[in-house]
Length: 397
Ligand SMILES: *Cc1c(COP(=O)(O)O)cnc(C)c1O
Image (tube, rainbow, N blue to C red):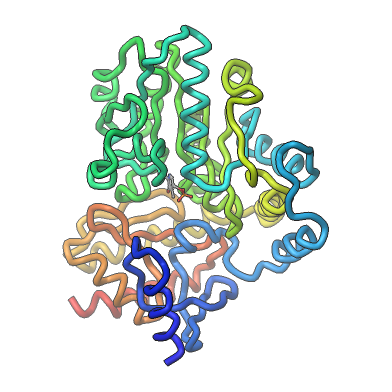
């Protein structure tokens, strides 16, 4: 079979850092994917919360094609129009003041950390600043991002990692308070933990941390890479809490398939942190990704996608709650908007593999959690179809 050949070829030449599902996805349309054999899949993973618009959005595709023919890349030594537009729009929807575009989420975290360190250094000239991050967090695979990732399994082989990082218990203000000292320069967390098992920040926790930051002159960095871009029914999850970060990291759905991330900050951080020479990137924010981000933000506004997420996610939640009542092996449902998780007492990777066989793409998260991060454009009928397929899988247990 054709597919076998591609899989063998991949395993022959690509470094084996992923245990992949045995399928070769070949094309997409709406919220469906098709493999090389023509089999159809309902996609409730969106390429890990990336494909917010689903597949084959013609307006988006045309914008990319137009930019390809005009200009792909210039370097950051020159201005370019698409990124100027993208930056202005991203600042407007986030209420942040300044943005730096990166090529990935991990790089956005790296930049956010550098901005916080430079800010603290500019203030007191010390070089022993500490960062407080959260247990069970995930911020990416580069060394800096790994240093703040609260999963010892990911970190240990690569120790010592850069920086002085302490890990607090997520959703425990006391735990955070116990780690704060006069060298603490930033507190970093995901507004909703993704890879760690879909844990939203509790409101009292996030507002408490924000207050602590203000009292102690510490910067609050929120990682909105997975939970941002409309996924929770707010453009950025923190907007639902009314807790504005000093620095924010964004990626995944920002480019809807084009590799781009960003870190953003308030004017007061920008004024006293990274200056010419302190940070840079060759590709970051080039005209091509600029056109992508700019068009993504236009489509979000035109389709009122954030409002759509609020409506459709209420229905998804209701359906998942029904599932929880019907199957005793579902121990919890957690999540906000279209970022949902079911904690199972049956092997979750087995469930996602069986779902794939049923034509349903679902992924997992830490702590035996089945993760639902579909394209934001899903409709009720897609939720019903997902439920039908998932019930077929669950019936085997
Ligand atoms: C995916 C993710 C990252 C890392 O993004 P990459 O683009 O894979 O580097 C960081 N933080 C969170 C919360 C993520 O979900």
